[in-house]
Structure formats: structure tokens, C-alpha cells
Image 1 (cartoon, rainbow, N blue to C red):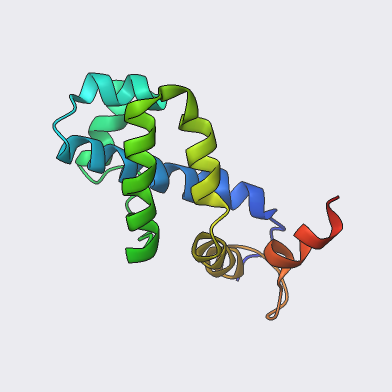
Image 2 (cartoon, rainbow, N blue to C red):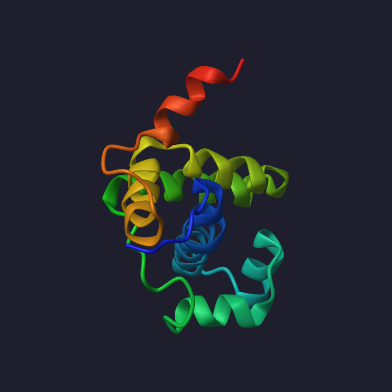
Length: 127
């Protein structure tokens, strides 16, 4: 455990969002979309997409079967209407399965207590 206090949002930025982009890029590639077009869809550089495919970026996090199934749905929506890309990435972040991954990483990377549920309980305080 690290003594650094990280917010769950920092875990999202450093680990989860790149992993989600990687999975979206892989699914788009599987659908025959060019690397250049994938970069345009996701608003990132072509070298970033290349690093996803070469396992040089976002390589340490496995999102799991349920999230990958949701990625397929998101990719279909993004291909149909690129204006939904941010919505779809946020939808994937908000899945309970993704929040569980955030918690696992958070426990390893930050000085938090063992039974922390901030990612789940914080929603109750937002109105």
C-alpha cells in the first residue's frame, strides 16, 4: 500500500479510461475500422491507438467479460453517432463491474481503509 491519498477519479483517469479506450479501439479494429478513423472517433492520437494495439498503453488492467460485452454496444452506438462517444465512455465507467475494478486498484495504490465503498456510497449524496 502506498501512503499517497488518491481520489477514485484519479484511478479512472490513469487506469480505467485508457483501458476503456483500448477495448473500444480493439473492437473497432475488429470491425475493420482504420487506426486513423479510430483515433478520430476517440479524440486521441494515432500513436496512442498504435500503443493500445502493441500492448504498450493500458496493458495492466483487464476489464472482464461483462464490460467487454458493454464495449460492443458502445462501439455500435459510437459508429452510428460519434457525438455519443463521451456518453458511452462515461456509461462504461459507471458500470458496477468497472467500479469494482476501480476499488481494487484504489486499495493497491492508495492509503484507504479495507472496507472502503466510496465509489458506491457517494452516489447517495448526489442529488
